[in-house]
Structure formats: C-alpha cells, structure tokens
Length: 456
Image (tube, rainbow, N blue to C red; front, top):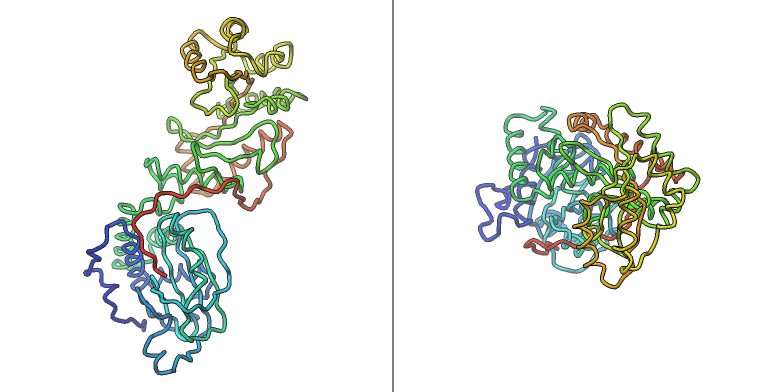
C-alpha cells in the first residue's frame, strides 16, 4: 500500500492566491501532485535520475515546501542522528546549456525550503529544486549541491540535473502508451494542458507533429533536431543554425541552418560567403562538385543556387544585397574560376555604381530588380569598402508530411546528418562523426526572468 501524508501544499483545491499563474511554484505544485498520485510518473522520474525502480524501494512519501530532508518528528526522536541510504538532489531546469554543478553534496548550515521531497525511507531521499527561467537557473544552480542535512547521515549523496521538458515528455508518453488509469490519465492531461497555457517554453518538443504550427515550439524542435543531427549546440540568435567552422574547422562555409518554409523542412548551407571561404570553395573543383547534387536527385529535394552578394566587414544580414542571378550553377562556377575571380574582394564605394554594378549586370550576376536594394546598401555602407562575394546557396528539403513521418520514426536527425555530410564530403571538408558530444560554441544570453522566489 502506498503511503501518503496530509500536506496542504499538495491540495489542488487550495491555490496559491498570492502568486501569478506563471510563477514557478504553481508548476512545481502541479508536478508534485502528479508525483504523489501517479506511481508511473514517479517511475519515470527515478529512471531519469538513474535510481532503481519503485519495485526495489520502500513506499514513497511525497512532501512539498518542506524545510527538512527527513521527517521532522524522526529527527527530534533520534536527536539529529538519522541514518539514510542515498540522497539525490535534483535540479529541474528549463532547456539550457549545461553548466557546472558539483556532483557531491556539501553539508552547510543555512535555512532552506525544498520545492519537493520524495522519501523512500530508509533507502532513498530525492530532493527537488525547480526553476522555470534560465536566468534564475544559472544564478541558483549551485545551491543544488549545498544542503543543510541537519545531522542526517547518508551513505551516498549526489546531484542530478533533469530538464522540465524531458520530465513532461515522459509523462506525455505515459498517456500515449495508454498505461494509466482514467483518473491518472486525466490528471496528467490537465497538468500538460496547464503547462501549455502558462509554461509553453517548458513543454516537450519531441516531434514535429507534436509541436504543431506554433512558431515558438517549432523553433525549439528545430534546435533539438539540429543538435541531435550534428552534436553541436545551435546558436541562440537568429535562424536556427550551427557553426561548422568553429566546431569542425570547416573552411568553405560557416554555418548550417534548419528552417520551415512553405510547409517544407529545409536544411540550408551557404558556401563562399566570405572571401577566405570562397577561395577554398573555388579551388580544386570543390564548387563544381556541388553540381553533382542536382544530378543525383530526381525529386528536386536538393537545390544549388548561385547567390552572389554585396556586403562589408561584419555586415549584418539585413544590410547585405543578395543579388538575383539567373545563371546556371555550372556556368556560375566556371565564370568565378576564370577571369571573373579578379572582381572578388573589396571595392571602393565611389566605383560601385560606375564600374562594379554595370559589370555585375553584364555578366548576369545581378538584375535591374536589385537596383533599389543597392541604394539602401550604399547608404548603410558609408565610407567603408564593399566586398563582392561569390557565394552559393545549397539546400536539402523534405515535404512536411515526409518530415513528420521521419521524425515520428526517429529517422529525421539521421537524414539531416547524412545530408550535411554529403555536402561536406563534396567540399572535401571534415565530416560530422557518427556520434559527437554536444559542444557549446557560444554562451546563451540570459532571458528576462519570470517572477520567481529563491527556494533554497
């Protein structure tokens, strides 16, 4: 028989009236109710933190907003000399890049209040600390390893990090599998519905089909797909992309991006956007090799398009002029490998209209429709030199229904991985390994904090 204790914090009919709907304590309380009432939900938590199944543990007592790791009455009776097996301090976080948290728990002398405690006495105590905002997670993460044990002695004590979306995903999976009773299923569905309304950034983004049409959730799924396919942590700003030059040492291109366009999933690469990249791209026939992608695909999934551009040093994308080029890709490559290469590089602003622009039109690298954007570019250019870059846009797309099917079957990251390696191979660049541990190329900026209280 499962043990329970009367705890007013776990009573769903007693709301935290003084807190906003989006306060982290509201979601924590909802999660603790699930952990109290749904044994399989506890099972997924134990599995996620690497602990034995409940079949190997004593009955569970669930507590919340607790100031004691063990039952206070037991502490008093034992004079503070309480013995327990294992202590796991779990940090429930939003989807943030890993940061340093000590593996060992340090015993400190400080008042504390735990978001949740699961006691499988005397074998195991699981302490939960919850954060729903990246800023507060990074600020207070170290506290997970600093607990006031109040004299309780544990044979083992360690920390563990668990992301909210992984926990919610596991509960979502229980509903899909149909292994819950009607009341259990209803309460988990209620929690997921509540989280969708007030904590959408924490929801699981397991497949493209699940995220639906919501743009925020789609972007999070694209980040997960690209990270899984490459092993590289995507950059935080702008289009969902990874830096191949930083992570792999790729010389002919900088980034690979994943986007959704006209209900197609599209992988983008832009070889030759910088002069040094273009030098590598047009040397040794690398650019010509890209044209093979068009010959081997009869469905139009691969696209290789000329994309010459005008920019300047450190020019943001919005200020660049991507020219309208009507040349065949093979002809485009041949011209840059010939005499036209002399034009690649810096041009004085006074010679752009009189010399460079007429040449671009004559050679088919630009059209008259680009003239309006040229005016805006010259205004942004100021007194700097303009740079002509003979870049190419390579893309691989999947029909949306096909992308959903592949993602449902767990095959989509592999498809993206293989597509990237196909291009890198043609360019004679370093390949993505079969397994690559995620590495951060840039620390993500903290987001604005939601209203939150320090729990410890």
